[in-house]
Length: 143
Image (cartoon, rainbow, N blue to C red; front, side, top):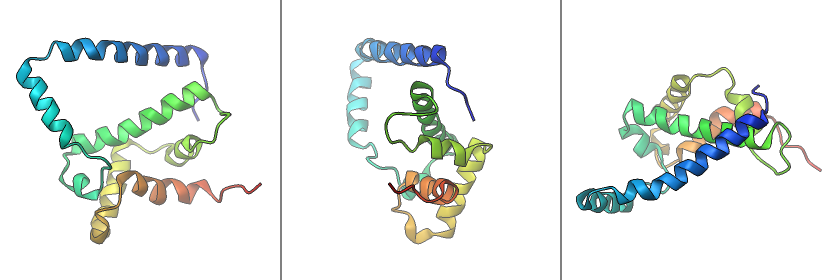
């Protein structure tokens, strides 16, 4: 299990801040046609990615989606440490997926949607959670 490092948390924070600051400048540099395309594509964005989108996605897009979830979990873990003060699913996610590669996670999601063609409307994150994380997370503790 990854360990909490304050220096890494600062670097992650600085990187996120720089990315946010740099985005308006990058958008201003886009030509008008690119800005129009960007506005049109925003209307077509997925609100909640489901099996329908997963099935038509390329292997690179599938891996990028999984990697995005893993990166988000790692950033939160690095910022909050091993004992977060708020309720979070990250420790369960990290524990359940520990030792799995991105291609293995993609294969598991692929197999689920192929075995359950009637569940194409199910969000991808729910497949990851209920098929991979929750079975390894155990029952929630009651107070």
